[in-house]
Amino acid sequence: MTTPKRIVVLTGAGISAESGINTFRDNGGLWENHRLEDVATPEAFARDPNLVQRFYNGRRAQLNDVNPNPAHIALAEFERNFAGDFLLVTQNVDHLHQQAGSKNLIHMHGELKKSRCLNTGRIHNQQTDINATSLCECCNTPSLRPHIVWFGEMPLDMEEIYQALEQCDLFISIGTSGNVYPAAGFVEVANSVNARTVEINLEPSRGADAFQEAFHGPASVKVAEFLATII
Ligand code: APR
Image (cartoon, rainbow, N blue to C red):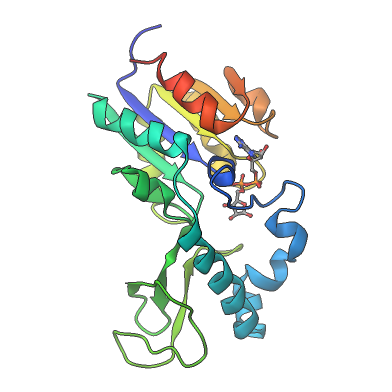
């Protein structure tokens, strides 16, 4: 197997599970406790902004108690030592990849530790709760929403992501169930350019058949194990 030159990695909630952050669709997952229609759509925000802000305030506050696990650390370490092109695309809105040291990173679904001004669209760092009286630092009005891509909204930086996928020779998907597009379709783009495609997940994802190779087990073990076979 030749050494890859252009790698794209996609991560999902499964990579942060061992850091103590609930996934969405596993037992007891976030969507088991909340209807996504009530907390993760623009309509939900228009209907009951306080409920939506409380949902994200709770998830943002939880970030103060979690740390990167060996899977996040292995990816950051690999990127530091890899001589080729490396892009990490995450569906996660936690900051554990940054905390582990990942650099070339795209948060396609936004970030809990950022907020967005409804008037100007500008993005701000957000460490604390957003509530009805929180003033935006760019226009000093109560106009902040979570900087999260909700269902029905366009994920971020898609052009850059597709460009990287169309040039990659290795695509690694880690800890995602393959239920949500466009991320679930990234493997097809990689296959279309004859890249090597690998799934690392606790169990076969919904899109498992599209991958050439699969390594099943906890990300904290399997990610470092697989990366060690590349360099
Ligand atoms: N190691 C590896 N994989 C794991 C682990 C673990 N320790 N624990 C769980 N998994 C796997 C599960 O088997 C599952 O396939 O992680 C996956 C998590 O799937 P989801 O909960 O559906 O999360 P994700 O795929 O990231 O969801 C995608 O859906 O709700 C939206 O915007 C939300 O970004 C999210 C998107």
